Length: 101
Image (cartoon, rainbow, N blue to C red):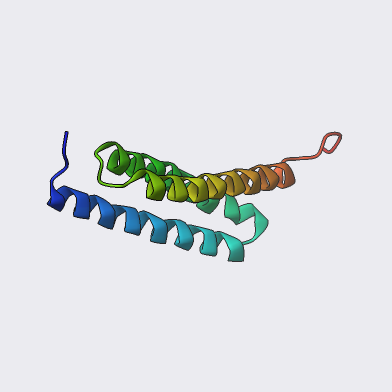
């Protein structure tokens, strides 16, 4: 299946929007208190997962070459790992410690 040029460009615009939305969510989370961060981190994680899928669609439709797809994917996977680590750290910090009442 070949993607028409208009679809490729609209998909590219959506990918650009996801990048911006991810950066916004991360920026907001970085300035919030520990208790308020998690929803924004999770939002960034969801947007990152959606971004991976859209990039895969571009790659599978041959709208994005292998080299560019690989370079972007590596960076996005790293972002996902960092967000996952941040989320885990926040969850541990926000959970009640054992032995407390």
